[in-house]
Image (tube, rainbow, N blue to C red):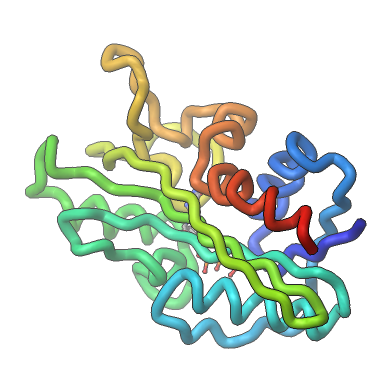
Length: 197
Ligand code: ITT
């Protein structure tokens, strides 16, 4: 079947197409260019539902939306739902990560822990709704490195790497990221629910 991906972020489209192709190659993921609803939720789940409901209503297809961000422990979970706009309304990824590094300039390891979070909502035109979450724990680098991925990838060091060869996600290949990320973890949790729709 066809499933519409309710995002205006082309990086998310690329990642979902790769993730879905690896687990549910029968599903065709199509992009969405309909009206963008106001994301005024205070949680990832609320915002993901707002986006998925709008796309399902607009297209008449099963809609999937990701609301995601980076949650820094020493900042009480911020930027969280404000990740896209941390340095202002321009959604400037470079400014966002520069501000976050600046806010953590006095914080040394082991207190730089953070997680990427992806919350996926799936909504059918008939009104069935599910929400799942994936978390990817790690910590923040002292400086940005690598040109891969998007957003905060150049400053996020996922847990579980060899201590002598740690890289930020900005230095990972798309294949490496999509096999491990918060987004792929959330989609893995969604797979059994999709089978029931
Ligand atoms: P849509 O609402 O149209 O999907 P968006 O980018 O505005 O696009 P969000 O409101 O969910 O989406 O904001 C997510 C932000 O969190 C994103 O802009 C990045 O700053 C950050 N983020 C989420 N996933 C990320 C990832 O895999 N790598 C790096 N940064 C990520």
